[in-house]
Length: 401
Image (cartoon, rainbow, N blue to C red; front, side, top):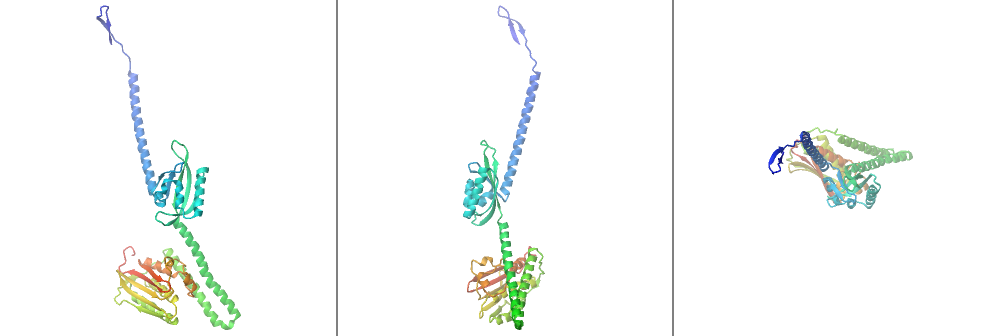
């Protein structure tokens, strides 16, 4: 609306102008609705992306595999806690610093070559290596270098590093290889002895009694070896169950002493038993604990020279009953002590003796003691003898039951 003026300048009339803006209002309202909807969708998408990012972080922070993402220049953009724990925070800054953790020159060359090929040829590389972890321990790792396209302005490929700790698997492989080699060796010895003795029997049949005794000894060795292997197989499969009953450890020790005193006398050794008279009764499997004591006493006799002494002893210590065997034998070197409970393991000095052990007795001792919730420890000094002690709790914990 605007005024119409006369020649004299007075307002003669009013002019009215109107325009229909209904469509404009409708479009504005629709635009506002679309804008609001777009804002809602952006917010929803942002929440979804944030949630997905949080979930990915949760996964990366909690998976056991070490994962890191490196930029084209080699700088590590992100690494999960497992990666830093395995390689160290300083290595988590640059991908080539992984080589600092590699334990041998040979593996450094192999890993370095695989990394270069992944970056240059854009081909996934997979390699196994042995590293020194942040805690100083050696670990076997399964390394994978994967070329990936980074979502950034450069558009250049990066490298995703994945490292899986396979130390346990490698230890199993090494154990299996050593187990088979040792089993073959320990089986070959009596078999070779049998073959040799049979040949000598044919050459000198007049010495039949001597040959028969030797053959019986070799057969007994094979029988003991198979029995020990059967026991370990049952232990591995959880098929060896304990028949627990309240027992006096002194009675078992006395029984073993009575059995092996004549053996010690034959070898011109002195076997003594010092039993604690007030030893409390404990819950144990009589047959299996007797087997433990037999193994320990037999080992002491086998590896103790003529004219020396062996002491069997029972006592109470820290809510446990203790059985110990102390000998004046060949002893065990400090570097060999961590391995004496391994299957088929025999020290270098033990292999040089004539003792016909299977190398499985101490492994069985440890397994049986574990089942009882007890422990077995050893102290030794080369040339000064050894002391093996087993400890059985007077009151078995509920978990052991």
